Image (cartoon, rainbow, N blue to C red; front, side, top):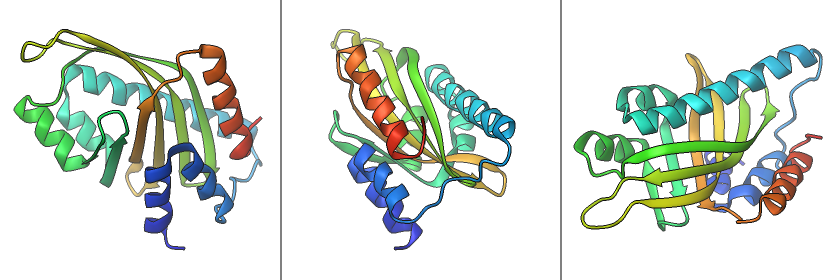
Length: 184
């Protein structure tokens, strides 16, 4: 199976797709240096936090630098698929909802291979009122696939679904994902 097929599978099927990414033959990174592995995981957590902060700041240039050219976001709640250019265009012209705040919880980083990583967690979003609609507050489970490009790590896909309301249940889901992709 080619890279595009695997990426599309992970996009369309969220956690199950991410597990398939592993099962279809992508090997886990060598565990030769646990310190370096942890340092890379921390770097990816920092990049993910930077991405969230860029959305709140409406910094399209920062997002442009973080998104891969083939980036796609599947948003199950909104029943839509957005490309990199869709999101950047809507942000620049003011039609993308304005996030007043975004807080991440339970972030899990799993290195799938030397050049692929999954970042998963809960993001609490508060959007500003728009067009007569009140402010909204939502919790989403976000799964991002990062790939190592020639110029650094980039997000190639993101799958967003409504979060499970119970934090304990979400913790179970995150731990199960970690088990599937070779974590604890």
